[in-house]
Image 1 (tube, rainbow, N blue to C red):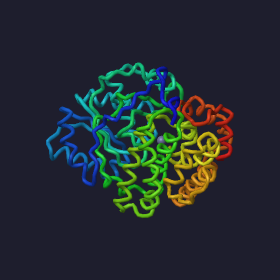
Image 2 (cartoon, rainbow, N blue to C red):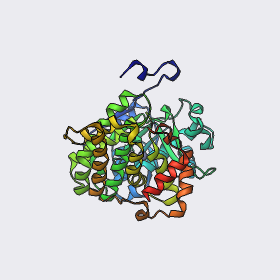
Image 3 (cartoon, protein in one colour):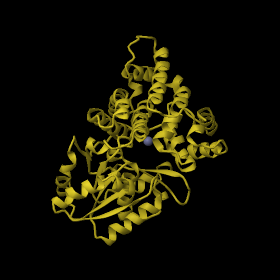
Length: 394
Ligand SMILES: [Zn+2]
């Protein structure tokens, strides 16, 4: 790197990894110690119907009961939550006299808990805090403590600074982003992901992979994020297929849980066009977030290739390419390897095969263009570029 590659005074960057992570098989039993450390007297346990049905919420409840920790339960977070979920959670928090939150589940309960946490001390509407409109400047450091317990290995929301919800004013899946949204503790217990069905393992795992990859390629200065991202890429390459084929493989599950954390820690650097499109595809086409990323990723990488050849070459090497080929060849190999990895875990190659309607593509491109994620895409993209990426993924 040359001196000019480092940030100069006009663009000094801030990097933060303050979440306490308790990681390991059986880590759930350490939950009470974190509740005590954070001096929470009564916690609101935020979760959703799926986590209740799987028995995982009950496992957390049993741990809290055994430790004599008072809590209330809010278990009605909807999949791909909207602002309404957060408002209902705030009402439950106030009615039960809580002073902290515990979130258990996938991205939906974890993100909703962050937004409940925000709205307990901040005035609505959530659109005021939209990252794309610079809303982070309105977020103060006075949120109650939040402990996050992931039951998927994908979003990494347990260690990320963002909460995502579809807002009522805009109908757009919106990113709220601030270091103050970071959970104070994350309990990462790979055992909690053992029951995740194969297709969800693939879709959430590809979300983790896309976080690592888009962050690694993002046009910004963040060497700490780069190191985490490239490590996560290697872990997913080694373990996603194993976790997909045998959900009880705890070593693979553990690797994926680390990669999910690394992806979310890394994307404080920024994401790219793939996430901009995925954020539009989910509310419009009801497509799972991880699946949306996975399907558009190859086209986005082809579009970006010329702008990040050296980094894509490094991705190929990290994923196991030892051909010693030229950088340009390695960059193509990286994209090919990613395509193959996706097909081995049952990801469809076309949006049309995942239920997306062609007539919706212009709207998807327009919403994606309003999403801040593409601002750090390694190659600058216009709304027309996003539309042609959506079309070529279709
Ligand atoms: Zn994502």
